[in-house]
Image 1 (cartoon, rainbow, N blue to C red):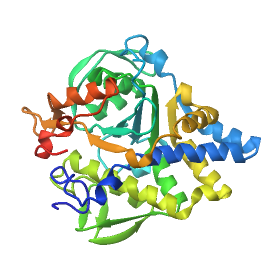
Image 2 (image 1 turned 90 degrees about the horizontal axis):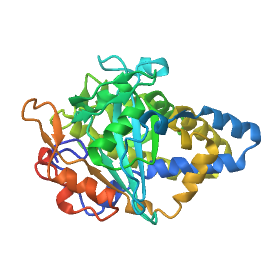
Image 3 (image 1 turned 30 degrees about the vertical axis):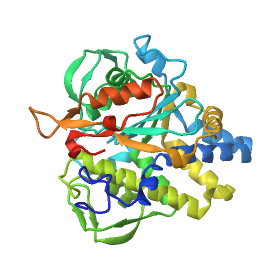
Image 4 (image 1 turned 45 degrees about the horizontal axis):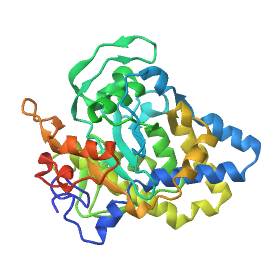
Length: 360
């Protein structure tokens, strides 16, 4: 291992056979969050329900994008774009450890739930990926012209969440059924609400940019430290965003383990506190922007086996012009998106990334 107990770009599939299934379960946090909402909505009074329902913010993705979208195929399953945003406004202002103003989509996952909903795949899109941004309508109604070689995580700041959805749809040809966003302040509060998360690292991690300073060993992270952990990049591997993706995957597994250990779903009071924190941090597409809609969607996922969740990084290669950026690697990326689009098994060759030395 060349990095501290994480899936570094060069070692993401060198772990033991017992660790591999854990890594494939990193997407369970979203399913479990939806389950929390289901139970909270079912077990509380109307005023509690109304409070949770009013927390959720909605974005009319269909209205903003219009008809310029990929066709929804009858056997394409469900596709959800999940973003972690690092807005520098409001409660997030004090959490900004970087020097960039505005907001960025710091984490991006395309979650594909195949027809029949017994398994799922999550595709991580590196934030430093150069993409073609299509023409978009900003939240204020103005139009933004298309542009080439735009860094993926800047699209959110430049034109808002609907443009991120449109950009992902253009680059993948995959129709997004839903959009879910959680902001950094909400992430911090969620970790604090459950009393912290335990992680183990094999080597010291010191990142003056994020503020993370961990010695090798096991640590109990509070919300602020957890945020530093999932945001750090300079203290891991080659300092690129690819190493950060491994940290995020490791942390989501640890978060799930903490939730299971505490049996949060068995405590109505704690369940409500977690649900209140989570819904306050959520922005979704307008179709999901209610507790009832989220609960219905959560129930529809009951058949998904979390053990079957597989996480894949979009195959990328370092850009020939700017080695600090990456671009989608071909033909691997096209093969990956085609498999998701047609709801077929993803070939192993489509999971290999040149920027990772040819590994998944």
